[in-house]
Image 1 (cartoon, rainbow, N blue to C red):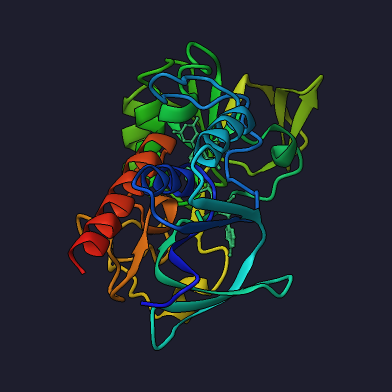
Image 2: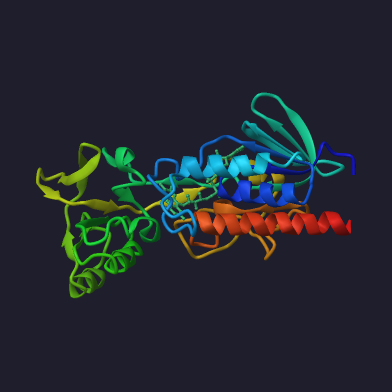
Length: 304
Ligand SMILES: Cc1cc2nc3c(=O)[nH]c(=O)nc-3n(C[C@H](O)[C@H](O)[C@H](O)COP(=O)(O)OP(=O)(O)OC[C@H]3O[C@@H](n4cnc5c(N)ncnc54)[C@H](O)[C@@H]3O)c2cc1C
């Protein structure tokens, strides 16, 4: 097959760099294109990543990129892939700055956009005192006063979960999102429920001080756990024609359907990391999936 590259890795976060390392070590001619906006960059440190627990994300990605760059068959560029389609041979892609290239296979590792409530103060604390994932930040928030903002009924379950890290859990809801049974369940679990709406987070010296409510009251907290939704960053997967997965988790919108080697419904197109998450997105999972996706492609190249 006469393409510019044997594989194009789109996205250079945990998943993409993991794929690139495996492909580089397999001496494959690949291109990595990365827009440089890994979702956890605001985080102070990656929680729960074996061997790199609490390493600042930017440091982790710089170290990983340097490891990838040590392989002469790998080209890695900054850029944003804006079009992608199946070509006669492999795939054709273009970047926002006009570079056009072809590749025999593609790994989509573009991550997902995390949408959180738009309360003033959240952006400033996002990934630290304002977090969404107990596995990522529960340890740092342990024994503190945690406010859990409930956006829908399943969030009530998250309030129960964070009780494993602290017994000072308060659910914040405007009263319209939980029914009587759910409220009674929280109360029975020893969780305080505040039923008026949070208006903003009060931040002092970069830390959460309190939550201010619409009725003018304030209550002090050490951290706040937020509901999120995850959605595609662009329509690139749809341009390639990749099928999305039917699934029950309402918080993850249209993850790609993949098999055990991360192959999508489009032959030659694999996906790894958040874009195809099975429901527990993490850096460790993204690294594992990127590794598997690359191994699958190397296998296909060897047997072609
Ligand atoms: C605030 C926050 C804190 C978190 N904390 C933790 C934690 O402590 N521990 C943990 O395990 N997990 C944590 N996570 C989850 C974890 O960050 C993700 O599961 C993981 O980073 C997903 O990796 P990824 O490679 O799929 O995506 P990303 O890391 O988001 O990387 C995708 C890359 O692809 C690039 N890209 C996107 N589209 C294109 C395109 N069209 N062309 C070129 N490049 C493109 C992006 O700019 C980005 O650089 C956190 C998430 C958030 C939002």
